[in-house]
Image 1: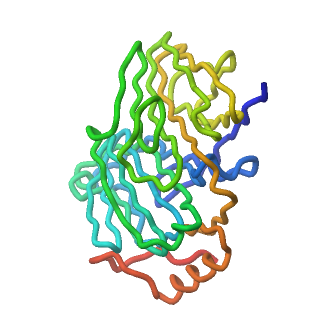
Image 2 (image 1 turned 90 degrees about the vertical axis):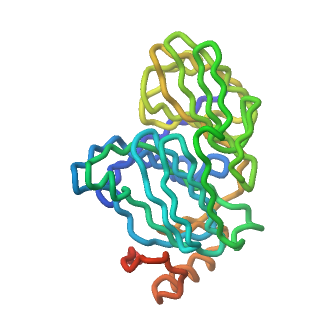
Length: 286
C-alpha cells in the first residue's frame, strides 16, 4: 500500500479575508480537475466591514464557492447578480473569458458578519477551454444529501457515494461535504482515480493515520480506506479524473501558455467584458 501525500497550507490574504491555500502545491499541482483550493478561514467583520474583491478576470476554469457561514454577493460580466448563502453552490464557468466581483452584501456590511467557506477552481477539458462563459446557482436544498449511522454526506459537485449533484461539471468530478459524529466511520472507495481529504474541524483517522487539521491528504490511486471520527468531524473529499497539466498565471488557467498571454494582454488593455455597474477592478500583477 502506498503512503498518502500530505499537503500543508500556505497562508494568504485576499482583500482582507484570510485564507489557507492548499492547491496548487509544489508536491501536487492538481487533484482530478481541481487546480486551486482555498479555505476561507472564519473571520468576524465589524459593522462597516466585509470582504470586497473587485472586478477581476478568469479564463479556462470553473469557480465553485461553497459557504459554511456568512453570505457573498456574486456579480459577473454576464449580468448575474446572486446572493450566495451557506450550503449553496455558486458555479461560474469562465471559458474564453469572464469577469466577476465577490463581496459581502450591503445588509451584512452594515450590521457586521462572519464569513467561512471554501472556494475551488476546476480546470476545463481542452475542448471547453474557449467555450462561452456561464453562471448558475444551486440552493442547498437541491444538493443530494444522505444521513445514516452518524455520517452526513452532501454532494457539492460531481458523483460519489451513490449520489449525483446537479452542478454541471465538465469532467468526472467528486466534491463532497462530510460530517461525522464521534465514533462514526465511512468507507472511502476508489470511485475516482484521484482523491484528497481535507479536515476542516475535529479529530479523525484514515485507517490508523491521524488527520491533521487544515492539511490536504492526497490518497493513492486505486486504494480504499476507512475514515473514522474520534470526535465530531467536518471534512471535504475532492477528486476526479486528471485533465493533464495546466498552467496557472494569476486568475488564468490554460493548457496552452499562449491563451494566458492573450488573456493578460486583453485585461491590461481593458479589452474585456465588464461587470455591469462596476467601475473598479484589480490590475494585472507585474
